[in-house]
Amino acid sequence: MKRILIVVLLLVFLSPLPGFSEERIKIGISCALSGPYAPLAKVYLAGWETYLKKVNRMGGIEGKKLQWRVMDDKYDPEMAVENTKKLIDWGTKILAGYVGIDTTRRVVAFLEEKNVNTPLFFPMTSSKFIKATVKDKIYSLMPYVDDEVSMIVNHFIREKGFEKWGLFYEDDATGISGKYAVERKLADYNVKPVYEKSHKGDYKHIDLGAIKKNNPQIIIIVSSADVARIFIREVAEVFGKENMPVVVALSSVFPCSYVKKVSKCVGPSKFWFTQATPYPKDTSYSIVRDYLNDLKRFSLGEPPCFISLEGYVAAKVMCDILARAGSTSLSAIEVAAENTRIDVGIGKTIVFNNLVHRSPIGVGLYEVLDEKPTVKTVLWNDFNYRRGSKKSESAGNRAMASLSANKKDISVDVKIKKVRPAEIQRNGKKNISPETVTTESAL
Image 1 (cartoon, one colour):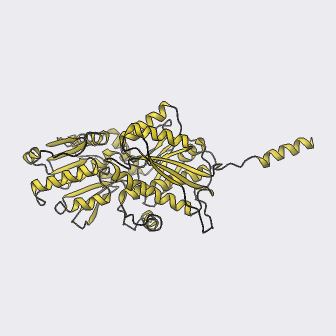
Image 2: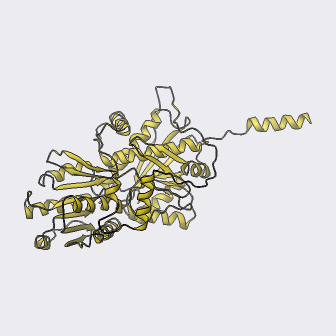
């Protein structure tokens, strides 16, 4: 009997403790480091890497360093799938930081086809194809494109009285998603665009005769950064800076470096845009203060930008989930992710559960006042402007508005597993080896 007891005790004490068994926690990232959406993807990645470097400098998660591998998919869906296969073969249990509807949707379809349960954290896409069901292993911090469009349309119709609307969009999934959102929202006011133009591939000169003939007061743009910049410049040349229509770019269009370029070729207050984060120099938010400090420490030379702040917040939330999971087992990550409730420092709590996998950071409308450029926050997370119209509201929007007004959380039955505290373990050692980062292109 004593021998049996000794054997049992030995098995208990010698068995591995729960936690991260790997030497490093591997994170796989595929995004457009080249191609039309590279300006956006590179800035989003910079935000991710700033926070991941910070975590490693602090000692990692439970003493385990993060190692991430970044692969260029050129915004090609099939290349994104090939990259994803390689990342999984490399040993990653976590996919993160993908950019764009076309690539993300194709990767999600591949994961479902092959019954791969690897979670995909926080791709930069506002498409509604990201469903909030338990079988989906994809989590999002982006607003729906309809939220951005609703804020724009409601503001310019209610506050400015604009009736003549134009639309310029890329002929891809991102642009078409924006097109339909604009048409749906304008229909709430019985308005149809007086000018609508699509574009595909490298930019070629567009005949702007139709735009001058129909003379829209405002044009919403959903395209890649370079295409949008050239289009805006040509519109300014045709109308003149002071008389040109107001142009509004959705969040998927411009990183901050392009905002500076565009501001120089338009008149005062003729350029507006939406973004999914607060102004990246607004230090009234604690997350912005942390972000600006960490940019200086870990991403020297990287200027503050809405898009990189978005990546920084995404990495913060993912690391919180991993810290609470306590391991890279898919079941532990899923339980931790679906029990997420974290205040990221913008006055908004990010919440995921077994019914909801999308919890937007927010949405804001910004006005560029001059060439400097001076950027003014016009609206930030104003639900009155994101939903509803003078004509009607959908049942879904009415329900969401009611929930927001009552400030009630949705209660769901979730199987709770005891998880570790949401804190990143600090390491007092000063000399910490840098993380391994591999950047490559799929051939």
